[in-house]
Image (cartoon, rainbow, N blue to C red; front, top):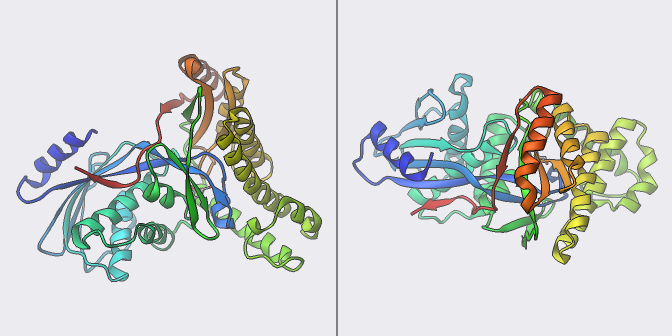
Length: 387
Ligand code: GLA
């Protein structure tokens, strides 16, 4: 839905008295640096132009009315009872952020809220983090005079996901969405939260987002399993070199001590983390030099590592990336986000994009029996009020 439609739906649902405010929170893609935010590595994501709208009006009482144009389920709760309820489904995300902010001592009262999302669900473009930041920024603007630091809101969003929803995610998604800037990618050091904006000038190439439309199965349990394997690797390697996180190691340092890890699987996980971190640094350097060919090669190397060493890709992502790379107009492709289904990205010659989409769509359908979706999005602004 577009902004004005969201506002009119809000008025239809809740009436048009009082001050109604509208906010937008983007989705994100990660260009490179996958599964290393929780290993203290560098990530290089950017916010998208499409995301989640939220219209809101403050109430004088403590009631929270939650509705969405995407789902039939409406949920009414009271600020006194924001406990997680499975049957509240999507509404647990806003409830979680409200509860975490309440516990952190921020000002709050009741609200009428209408959400309208343009991010396909389960596509790995962070529809949940988008919703979390949307609610955080709303509460900041409505009740706290905009005084809450943006990075604090990012951390509160992650905390809601970790502690309330129960997904042990890193900080990347919330950071990219809360701190994103138009036409800039964010180079974030997840170990220190130091960050800088980078011009993501893709020159004669476009970024094509390819949705495999393969539902991400076992996503959460496998995600938490990978985190545990990395922790195990860290514990072993730490005996031979003092490090806080796996990404403290350079590839050279890793090579010297890696054979202390007896399990091939655990060694592979660590190897992915260490080398992926190096790839991010190399990718940013290549992009800054305008060397898109090298940048593209690093994207592909990242995918191969996620497939062979980290094992988070799966058939759908591997096939769509393989098909993309078979195309002459594509100079690099990889899965983006958590994996196990969801989206991949490809760097494609601008004038060939239409042809590319047609070919990859057809070939992917032939091999997987699923129709893929393709999105072309510029880099959008982080979460903000729509005036
Ligand atoms: C998900 C998580 C992020 C990050 C990515 C993988 O999107 O939410 O924190 O770990 O997976 O890079």
